[in-house]
Image (cartoon, rainbow, N blue to C red; front, side, top):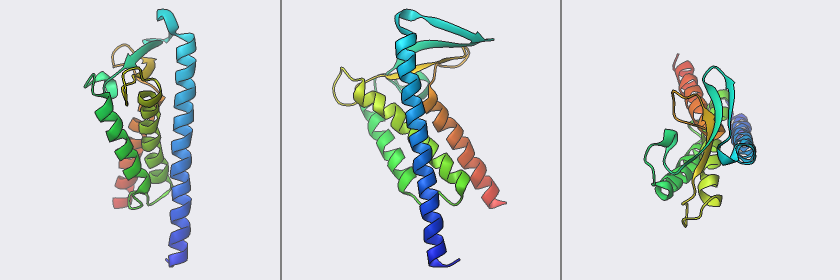
Amino acid sequence: MTGAATAGSSRRYGAAALASAAVVVVLDQLTKWWALETLENGRVIDLVWTLRLRLVFNTGAAFSSFQGLGPLLGVAAVAVAAILLLNRRLVSGRLSAVATGSIAGGALGNLADRLFRSDDGFLGGAVVDFIDVQWWPVWNVADMGVVLGGAALVWAAYRRER
């Protein structure tokens, strides 16, 4: 493959990663805004089986672990997003580009909560979680982007090795 073709592919994959990250951040923030408006005052919406919508504020890491470490987790989220979006070796195809963007978008979506929902100083805000299956910790669209993006990135690496 020529240098020009490689540069073109790299730009396309970079654009796909950025677009994927932007979609995850926008969907995450819109759904969190909706959850804050709709689920305030302890309202719970039962959907199907054990799936319900219930507002929770998480000052820890994914799935409510490491409570109170918001500033450290915020700095880690910035580092993860930067590494993913700037590391061109991870992005070798459209699937890995979208997966990388989804992970970065999830990290940035939760980082936005820590930055803009803070009453406790720098990166002291709580992440808004609202998707509750009742047998797993409450989560949000950003968490979904990280988990599904991670699974897709592993799948893309597996396919590349075969």
